[in-house]
Amino acid sequence: MFLDKNDMPMVALHWEKYLEHIIQKYNRIYRIQMPKVTPHVCRHTFCSNMAKSGMNPKTLQYIMGHADISVTLNTYTHVNFDDAKEEVYRIANS
Image 1 (cartoon, rainbow, N blue to C red):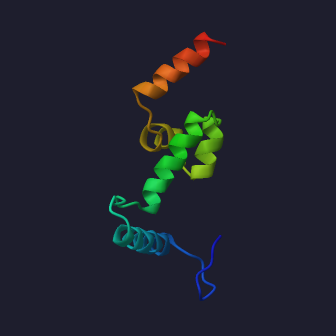
Image 2: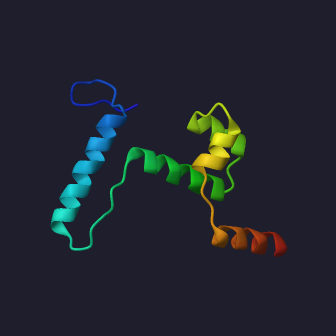
């Protein structure tokens, strides 16, 4: 758990504002602009990366706090053709 400057737990809105400030500062300095990133986008990225790394789906469901495994696997986990191709090659070469 992270605390704010008043020793209160940070909530999603705190993180969203914090990331917004970082992105605005970055975009003022650099020519190539960073897109809007939210804590929710980070949750999707984390979940997808953990699933791709081979984490047990039930463990991932627990970490994400989802009551239903389908939310973890069908909503938060994003894979594409390249991911499927890599997995087929991995299985074929083992």
